[in-house]
Length: 247
Image (tube, rainbow, N blue to C red; front, side):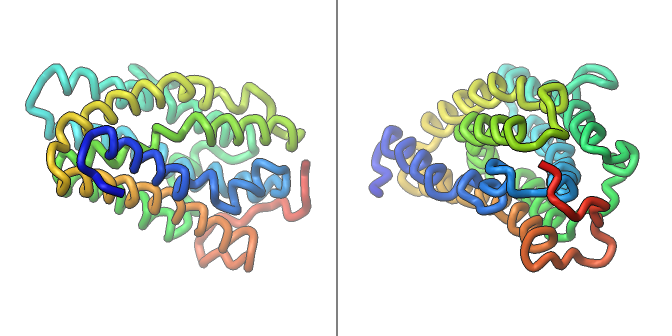
């Protein structure tokens, strides 16, 4: 696809999302369709916590590189959304609530015990990318939020319909994300369309989004390998206590 304009860039970004976003991953399909047991859902929530916990860290890294105070104020809302303004608020606390409702010990989750090595590598690679790559690419890597409402809708509908151990209270994390993600995506998309003013920069933006889709895909690859097929969790990884379907 020719990247000779801002509109062409947006079209390519949306194409990447349609082709590479992790709503296309088999693990997501199994979750959505009620094909996982409770232990496998627990493993997903535990490993996803590591990613959730690093989001305000990567956003703080971006803020530290923004010279314009107006841009810092706008971007700071992302950190507040996840950290809250005090203990017990924010997206990370709501994710811990989900983990607890699934029967996981919140202290164990906070301590990051049992995280898959591939999850940790993928998440830390994302933080490193945001810290080290040009600011335009760091911001562009957040553009997976353009596609978040789709996967949130599929995920929450499937979890509520297919699993009797999950209710709406357990999934309160996703309520806020349905408004936060589009707001953040709109800002980031406008930023990259404005600042990617050459074909080379537009290609770098696309490459950054491709990298981020790989980060998300790799996390589900790790979960599928460890807990679905061939079910080979590495030493030290979380071992579910539930081994039969609980749907």
